Image 1 (cartoon, rainbow, N blue to C red):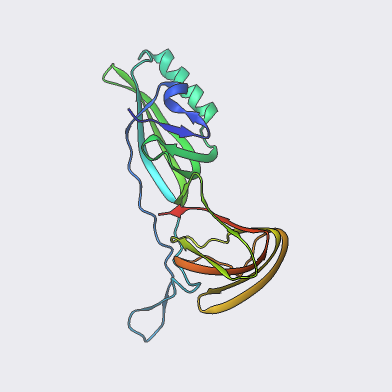
Image 2 (image 1 turned 120 degrees about the vertical axis):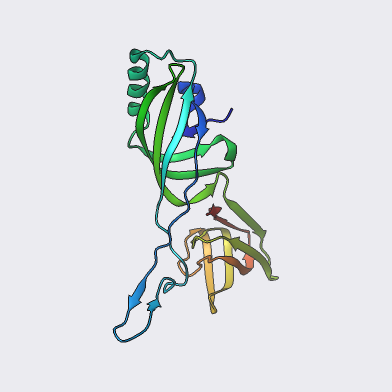
Amino acid sequence: MYSMNIFGLQLDEEFDLYLESYTIPSPEVQTDYKKIPGMNGSIDRTEKYGTVFFKDREWDNIVLKSTSWTTDEDSKVELERELLNAVHGKSGRIIFDDDAEHYWQGRVFVQDVYVEGNAMLIVDLSLVTEPFKYGINGKTFTLNLSGSEQSVTLTNGRKVIVPKVIVTDNASLAYTVQGVEHTRELTAGTWRLTDLLLYEGSTIVTATGSGTLTIQYEDAQL
């Protein structure tokens, strides 16, 4: 049976709670329509910044069950107290056992703890999370630099990301973002290049230099 991990607490191990059911809600698009008097329809400015942005996901009716607790009122009150203290209102990583390679970032709410059919205790949770789920390990690309040009292709999903760039000696970078060419000269260190924006699709970075160049960024998916 599957369970879930909330802020490092594995619910089947900590509370003997197993997932009965849950549904991943679809993220709602942050639309921006401008109505113009005397004009049919509206001007759609949803992608005025070059991408679509999404609202938080609101999860309802995440149902967990336990058959090991007794179903008297004392057990119900004790389980509810433990859950309220452990997770209610807190924010952090949320991992479902059936998708253990990804996590959601968000806040947890204990909605109810009750007895069903005089046989088991039921816990009803809700969440508010970011629209994207993230890979546990992220993405990492490394080049051993020289005087000859080398290229790396950075693939990305719907979330616009600024990757971390790590240089051990020196590096000359060239890349094109939304039709605009950029070049950067970097010394040893860790960099966040605000013009190196990874939009949906592929971005090619060409580099020369010495030492190593490492590029790291989140694996974000809808």
